[in-house]
Structures are given as structure tokens and as C-alpha cells.
Length: 313
Image (spheres, rainbow, N blue to C red):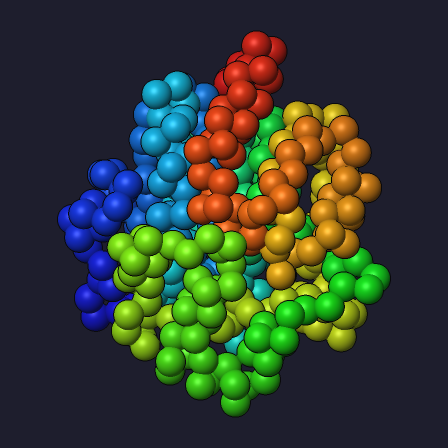
């Protein structure tokens, strides 16, 4: 655990479009930061790497008038504590278990319902969030997918070379020391240059070397082939998607994503053919930055249209 927080909640509230009251949940020796904004049916938003809850700020602002937005920072990221991950353990599985404990706490003591959750995922938030849904069957009754994967990579997929290089331990150590994971992601993820203040906000929790270990680790666990430790987990995730084939699903996709390309999108449409598909031709991996309010409006419309027969319980 870090000797001091990488960023205090009060410092975070001064970042652009992030006027939220931070909350904390104790997982024994470490604490998880999360947002809990608004009232109504709960919407759980799960970020990936190397982002944090700041990614969801505009969606929270757009939904909290009607929905309860629960937005955690995954362990080792954002404002959450940095706790050690053991060798041989998959981060996606561990973070899903953390998520389960947080949501169990909110349902037991925070007045949240035991059913009727909407899950929104991006990047590594897909494997984390969907594994959580697998651990807690029946809790989620709507899914919003933004540029992620939750299955083995389809035939022909090629990992971009910067991420491929991170799988080498020597390169990973250099990337960790230089904060290259976050810096390269901010350069290649959005298709439109970010305002400097927003760029700096994304980097803020990772300014110190001690606060970045999860970023390289996530990149190194990307499952490309059966030889990778994460491949069986990806297979189980793909099989678990059957639970969503009869539920409302929204897929919002930045078409100029260098990481999750057209092959990955095609795999989503094959596995969830009834999904409400929204394509954004000029958006990249950070589709929430490139399309901002259009995407928020589209998600809000999707939730409104599917609200009438969905009641939390």
C-alpha cells in the first residue's frame, strides 16, 4: 500500500468536470475509492487501464439526475490504495472479486437493490465487470459495452506493437519507470487532442513510480493465445456472455481504436447479435472523450427506452 494517497479526494474534485464526493470502502488492509452519485436504478461503471473513475465523469453528470451511479477505482488505480498483487494471480479476476465485495456492501448497508443493476464497461473494465456479473448471477439486467473484449481474441487479431512490447519484462520495467503506459495511451487512445487540464487529470494518480505497478501488469496479462495465463479466463468470460443474449445490450464503439479493432467488434456482434449497436466513425479507444455528449445522450436514451419493464428488487 502506498504510504500516502496518490491524489486526495479534495484534489480530485478540482479536476475538470469531476465535482464529486469521494467515498471509501475498506477491504481489510486496503481501501477502495468510489463515487456514489444520484438516486434511482443503479448503474455500475467499470474503467480499464490506465484510466480511472475520471473516465466516467461526463456519463455520471449526464445520468445522476435519474440513476444511482456507482463508479469505483480499481485496486492500484485512481485514488484507491496500492495493494500488492501476487505473481500468478490474474488482475481481472482479483479486481472482479473486489468489485463483488463493494457491491455486496452497498446492497447490504447502502440501500442498493439486489437486482436491476446496469453494468457499463470499457477496456479492462470488460473482463473485470463481466466476471463480477458472472460471480453474482441475476444482479445485472442491462449491459453497456464500450471498446473492450470479454472473450479470446478472434483469429487474425494483432496486438499493437507498443502493447506487445510491454509483454517483455525489460520493456515493462522501463515503461513502469517512465509512466509510458499512461502517456502512450493518452497519445494514441483519443483521436482528438485532449485539453491539457484533462490530459493532466488522467495522469494525476500515476505521477509517482510506486503508484503505477498495475498499469504494466494489465498490459502483460493481455490474452493473445492459449499459451497465455489469461487465455482460460477469456474463454470462460466468452461462455458467460450467454447470460446477456436475452437482455438489453448497448454497444458504443469508436471505430478508430488501435487496440480493439473491427475484428473485436465483429466478435461482439456475433456473440450478442441483438445488441443495440452505435458506431462512432471518428472516435478512437477513448470513445467517451472523442464523442463525449453524443455518447452520453445515446446511453441515456438506451436506458430510458429499457427502463419501463426493468425494476430493481
